[in-house]
Amino acid sequence: MSPYFSLCKKAMIRSKEFEFYYKQDASHGAILKIAEKAIAANRIYVTLDVAIELCERLDLLEQLYQEFRPLPENGQLGYQEIVEPESTYQLELSVRRHRQNLQITQSKKRLTRGPPDNINVPDMSDFRQELVELVENLSIHCFELGVETDESGLSKMVRGNRIAVIYCPVRPWPWTHSYQRQQLLLDPQLVGLILFDRNVHRIRRYCERVYPDLMVDAYVDIDYDHDEWSVFYENLKVRWIRRGQQFRINERPGTLSLKHEDQWFTA
Figure: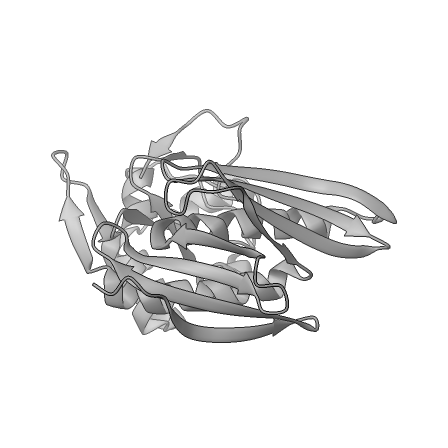
């Protein structure tokens, strides 16, 4: 494989231009270099798997930013840390004169050695969208999509080192009593309908056939009106979670993990 990075896209984010480079890697599928064009020294390196994790952390910070009102004139709003064998990444979200700034710092590097690297992102929402698009495209070419079944008979859709988990950002996930909830969260057929078919009527028919008591259970536990379920089916999403990582079901809109809930699942 080539030792050189190839430019794969450019993105203008609030008057600052970023360049995204990649090279194929036998161990990681691909390695990305994300750089500020105006300042060549400002860049970070991430494996494709870490880039997927970075998208998830940016999503959490974006939710925090939307909920943090009123914004202070200056100050730090949020912090996330990604600790990986190759590197450690610190994500610091702050505001300067009422404008957001996200600094991503990469340290303890095995991939590139040397002192810490960093980039400053003026709009994390636009940056995340650009990164998500790139990660999705590279994942298709670098990671084979497949279904695996564990010893208990539970099937999962797999891409590289990630497991597909179903969630809904605008409605709580319903409590269910009639079948294993983990089966519903990881159902590879439902994942396929959400990712590739994108037909809300087929998604709904599938759920009503395979999980016939889903809405009944939810009415009892969440007390949602029947008409609101069209919103639920229209907004089902898939999040790729690292294999072996623990997570909780979202019991309120926009969340996949709540620390006060009592039931953990493992991807």
